[in-house]
Length: 54
Image (cartoon, rainbow, N blue to C red):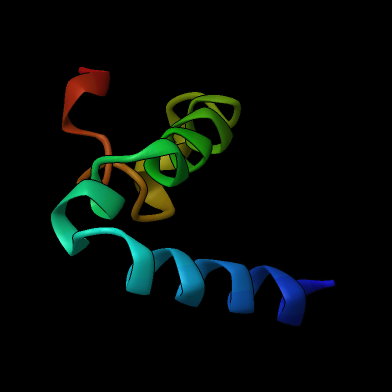
């Protein structure tokens, strides 16, 4: 469930450095979901989250 994911994320934050976490697999998931929406993703605020998309 979403709550379980939230707990896993919080555990990850505790076990890793924040910087490593922000640059880790989680951002890749966000990037893929945004790219899947095509150009529309930028209108949903996903643009800034994936600067390498351009």
